Image (cartoon, rainbow, N blue to C red; front, side):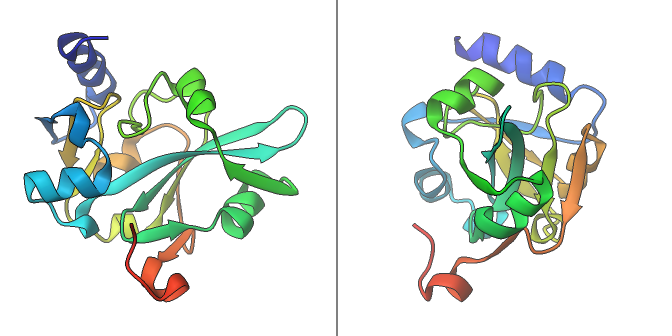
Length: 172
């Protein structure tokens, strides 16, 4: 896809959801830490969309939104929500096949029909968030409340925890 096609798809997915801004970025700087440093955004305002797979037959998938300063609790909170015995991060290939999005640009907007969207409650406490835009060329800047208008969205307390509380060090 090219930047114009990516933007058109993103605009269509955002239609009717409320106030937002599209922010073009260098695809080489799309990964969260590099993006925040290059474009002067705070990590605590950056929210990542991560696809998780629950190990079952057939596999169960969910998209999870977590602040960049937090770590997703895949082994407990997400697994329990999926109702599976095991869960893990979906591979880049699985993520691309399911969503059409590359890692570094995965977005909650335009997910496949029926895919659960689990939002860590800490995301909703931020007045403004920066999210992937469906490609490595775009980000979406919007009030966190925009997520509540998405299908299959559920705010989950404790879906993630601050990275420093779990590891004793800041996130990478």
